[in-house]
Length: 282
Image (cartoon, rainbow, N blue to C red; front, side, top):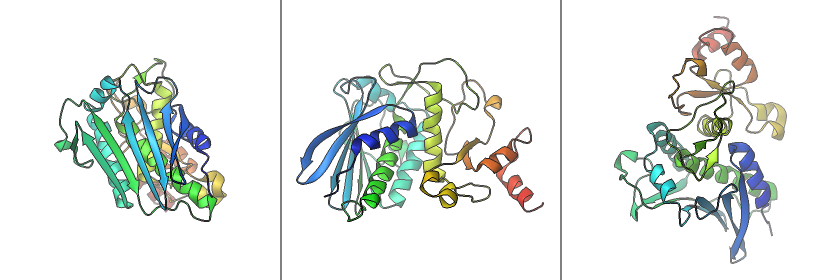
């Protein structure tokens, strides 16, 4: 029977989002495995865990704050509009691909795609995702692993859209992709790592295909190119104010290396429509 490599999955998510996660096995549900993902830089009781349960041709995932994570939950409830909009976009994409996203705040069900209806002053929050049918427990371990990675990555991105992080490095780097509003003492990432969260969110929303020429690294180079693409700021970071929070839904777009280089041949950069016109000899 297929057994997922949850430790490898934790490393892949760490690399993708820039936040260190570790996996821990949980008691199996019948013959099907379960595991949890937790941040490595703080106690789970102060932060959160992501519970992943694999069932017959289905997946169930749950975000569970720690027993002493009240500050984290409170700041999730006061997330800035860019982060809330990102959460809504990701929830809608999951729903469009036949997954069910559920959310409870203070014991009451709320609509993940209608943040205007969410209450204020959060004390408790639960976020869940279920995908059925899912291509797991099939005869192909490769298909099983790919499906598990896909939906675990999507759920992790959904959670990271709302979870606040603290900037631990004041140094600026070239092409930094912004920080969210708010901070929390328990979950810490630096500016570079937040840029990776935004990059991951951009790819999740827009896909890993160039928006200007439709080039796909996966189609050109096979598995080694899967999920790879450059991420371009519609407005250069140097032109953004110091307090501006990047919205991956609207401020970032995936471009291939060639189109990305052409975009920056001019200041301000060429727009997507202008790049397309250049390719057509316009």
